[in-house]
Length: 131
Figure 1 (tube, rainbow, N blue to C red):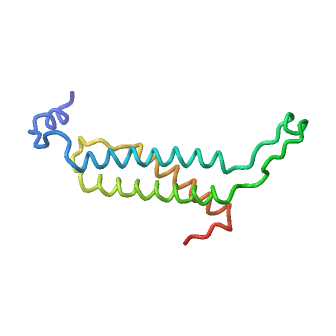
Figure 2: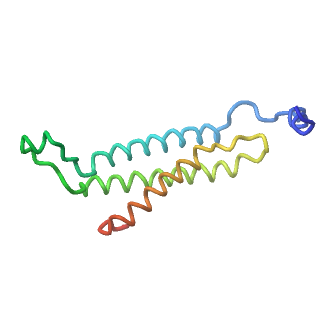
């Protein structure tokens, strides 16, 4: 270990166990990722169905356009995912002040993917009105 890291280990730890903010961050993190996974499932159901050789042979009708009701649900799920992740970032900025505190990189990955999905959705679907 370097001399600088030894200094951090010698500092007395005043935090005993996980406080309410840490538990809240963990709960919000699990909720955000669950909402994002649900949003990806809704995306799978909302997109147009793929035409296969079997469906063409059996004359099975397929949906060739997006399901608008599911797209509205997808939009709400992505907005709530971004909102919860922003709340986690605010709580983390208030709580994590030490250099030894972890960065929680998954929050940045989640807000980047959910935010990018939201932007693509807003650019692609003009009919989607922000209420």
